Structures are given as C-alpha cells and as structure tokens.
Amino acid sequence: MLSLFNPPIDTVERLDTASRVFEPARTDYYQGRSGGQLQRLMTARKDFLAVWRQGDYRDKVSDLKMFGRQVVIVNSPEAIKYVVATRHENFERKTPQMRRALEYLLGDGLFISDGETWKQRRPLVSDIVHKNRVPAFGPIMTDTSLELVRRWEELGDGATVNALHEMAGLTAEIISRSVFGNDLGEDAAAAVTEGFTSYQSLIDSINLGYFLGFDEGLPQRRTPSLRRSVKRIHTIIDRVIEDHLAGKGDHNSMVDLLIRRQSRNPELKLDVVALRNEAATIFMAGHETTAATLTWAWYLLSRAPWIEELVHQEIDAVCGGNAPTVADVPKLKWCSAVIEETLRLYPPVPILARQNKQADRIGSIDVKKSSLIMIVPWILHRTPSLFDRPNEFLPERFAEGKRPVPYSYIPFASGPRVCPGLQFGLTESILCLAVIAQRFHVRVKEGHKVEPACRLTLRPKGGLPVTLHKRRGL
Image 1 (tube, rainbow, N blue to C red):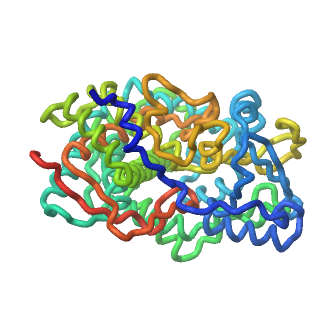
Image 2 (cartoon, rainbow, N blue to C red):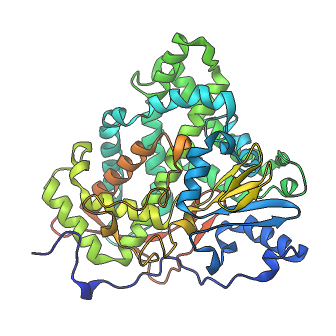
Image 3 (cartoon, helix red, strand yellow):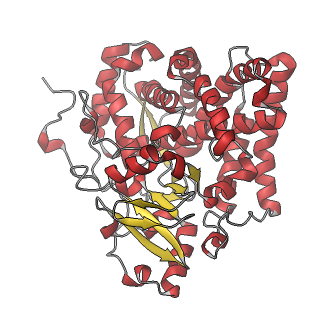
C-alpha cells in the first residue's frame, strides 16, 4: 500500500521553486562602492528577492555598509534566537522602512508598534485570536469556502480565474466575518484586495532617508494615488466597524471582544481610531498572508500532481462526501504538511527586519545603534545546511511530527513578536485548501511563467492565472 508521505521514488521530480537563477555575489555590492550600493537599493525597491546571491544562502551572520548605515544579515538559527528572543527588548522595533511604509495604512496598529503601545495591546490582541478561540471561527471558514466552490462550479469546467485574486477575496470575506461579524460582499472584498495591491505598488519600501542618516527614516510622500488606495481600504473597514458599533455585527466577533475589553479596561485607550487601527491590522495581516499562502499552494500542487493525489485520497478518507470542518483539521495531516512546506518555500513575509535600540553584538559582528537587522525567511528556509534539497517541494519533511531545527523555520516570525494569529492562519489555510481540493483540480494556465516578487508581501508577479477542473465523480 502506498505510504501517505512516501510516494514511489520514480515519481519524485525536482521542482525549481526558486523560479530564478541565483548569481554569484558581486564584490561591488559589498566593498562600499557607491554605485553598487545605490544599484542594490534601487533593485530592492522593485523586488526584495532580486538582491540575494548564492553566497547569502549559508548559515552565517554577515554585515555590509549602505551609505554609512550598517546592515546586518542574520541567517543562523542561533543568532536569530539571540535577536528575536534572548535580546528581544533591544531588537523589538520594526525598521523605519516597515513603520513608514505601513503607518499611513495601519496607524499605530500592533504590527508596527513597539514600546508601551505594543506591551499594552499585544496581550489583548493575542487573546482575541488565541488558538482556543479558533474552533469558533471554523464554520465561517468552511461556509465561506463552500460559497467560493459553488461560484466556481457555475463557471464551468476549464474556466480561468486569477488564483491570487480569488484567494484574496475568500480570505478577506473570512476575516471580515470573523473580525467584524459582517458579510463583506464580493465588491467590498475586491476593493480591499485591489486597494492593497495598489498600495504595495506605490509605497516606498526602502526609505532612502534612513540610509542617508535619518534614524527614523522619512515620512512617505502621500501622493494622490496612494491616498486613493488607502481611502478604498479605510472606507470598507470603517463601514463595517460603524455597522458593528450600531449593533449590526456579531456579538461573538473579534471586534466585539475588543469593545467589551475596552469597556472593562478604559486604560487601554481604544478609541474609534485605535480600534480601526487594530481592526485594520488584523484584517490586512489576516487576509493577505493566508491568501498568498493558498495561492502558492495551488501553484505547487499544480506542479506536483502525485502530491495532489495524496491530498485528495486523504480528504476522501477523512471527510467522505462531507465538506471538511475544523474538527477534521487535526486528521488532515497531508494538507497540513502541504501548507507548512508552502510556507517554507514561499513565506508570505519573506523579510523580517528590526532596528536595534542600543549597540550590540550578534555572533561575531559588532552592531551599531539603529542598524538595520535583517532576518530573511526567503534565504533561511532555502539554506542547504538547514534543509536537505531546499529548493524542492517536499511536504514529507513536515510529516509524522518532524520539525525543522528551532529558529530555522519562521514563516510567522518567532519569539515574543511571533504572529498572534498563527493558529488562526494555519487552520484557515488547511481548511480552505481541503474544502476546495475536495471538489477541484487547480492548474496553472499553460504557458504562464510564474515568478515570485516581493515588496511588502510575497506574491506571484502579475497574479496566478489558473484553470479549474472539477474532480470526477463529484
């Protein structure tokens, strides 16, 4: 009998999931020549992934100078633990790049806050999305996925859709119903998705001012196009918050829990603006990262039909003809392994960067105050000394309780700033994958070149056109 996690060796083919050729490190990037520095910054502004070279994919800590600013690249599990856990207090601040890039959209939301604001709100938000609350949101995840399945069935066999757009709409609706207790609606979900796509394309994610000596970076220039993108998103979020405050939302929603907590603890100072900021943070982080994960999962399964077949066998065995539910998730081992391996190859946030408050020492590197500390899951998860055959899609590496070396696999960050919605996101990804895979084969459109690109999050460049094929007998 075919072992669930061990397909016949002759069916396993190499998947070059890197989707790019890594070039040797160029010395002009590392020896301080201004031309090389500016070129690297301009390349990173377009796509963070394009700056990494083959020599970066090693278990090490290294540094370089960018116009006098020290940049420390931490790609060693032991050193990562030092930064995110041991010396968390010194490295808790998100970088000026991230803070400036997102402050217009998220205000002082948890994702980019630090200090007392972060300490005050982190326990609150963590409790709201705690793993023990996840089962209560399971029916929303299943029902919303089934609505997508029914819409796809109406399109007919062989229909073409943009998987990134479809998954973003699905996860936006799930997070809206979970956070606000309101149906978002297809038009509003599309507005949020398109608004954030536009926002990512317009934002300056490098902040040249930081490298020129401004420790806090420089504010983003709020162009008319950027204002329109933010307004589209804020209009939707403000509307659902206002509906909720008017009594139109679900009293078991996350926002209702926030409001009740504020009424008991006025010192939290969660006024309407702060409430919007936290709701927007949960909303944007919750829908964007899961949408990207599901999109990449469909790409990988399309390239590995033998793994897709094992996924189908498992869903049929666990669920039969019934739609997968949150109670089935612990038994969907193969679906879980596919999602975990997808997160390894395509972490939704492929660069986790920090700014140290005081001078420090990471490994053998002396680090100046206010330096740029870069932990890069994109290269960490593909480092050969940490992962065997790192560029291959091998879900079995997460099978039967197997786990990577601690701090070598951090798609949700780690330490005190680990994503509070980790369990919500994982459960949502597994359940949505199972509900859709139970009914459909999803295939990347023939001839389409898939290339990962990153500005704030990791997406397939230009989206992911796929064709939909209903499974036989269903």
